[in-house]
Length: 348
Image (cartoon, rainbow, N blue to C red):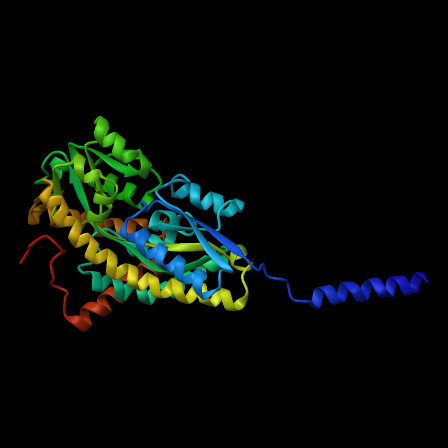
């Protein structure tokens, strides 16, 4: 009897091991973001969520915690790792908390057009998806923030004017921190949800961001000027825990992936138009775009390119920097844009 009992037990265990893991019939994916409710980012994400619910017959729903309800992006990533969230729609700051090397796609003064960004980022995205996969995250298709400009209460006509201002810096941003140090800028570390109140109180009198972000977060109503020169092009993406995705059936996981990919492309188109519209809104509300002098553009470009090499081996590898430069130069060779000015400078 003892041998028979043992045999039956082993048979049962083997059967359990071979049986497919049951997938939950209804799965809610909890996703956090800093994007405010009603913003173009959330409009696209909400439509994608509705499509996912429809295509999976309600088996998968997306619950978004927008507007920083779950804290800053560092909090999002920490909560995903603890299982308190399933994913987050984040900027490259949040992505860097999973794998910092992705910031090589956001180096200051690296790109001259959005098309250049698209070419380089599209070539490198599968490489980064594999890196994120190894760390337990699905890196979905690339989202977008857009060109980043300096916004200030006082006019900036030379680098010295920017150095005289108390300029917000995202406390978790090592890349921008290195840039500020290189340029001699006075950074005041704050989280994104703290910027608006500190612009109002005067703790800071300048910040940086895309026009759309400045309008959506109401920063534009506290400043008077914006530089015509963007310093970089900011990206983002949604990341989801691989453990959370394992709760989905293969069919539902594919539906989520396909819908997310299609909406990421749509999001980039929407955000580019919304950034242009936001510039108009800022102008109508009294924000003046100050033409950035060529001398200032040249100085920032020179110091930025020095910084690219200095950060190789610290934030990203020398090989990753070379991958970006090679892809960028390949694009320029194909489109003969090597002599093009930085966007918005008006340089000839």
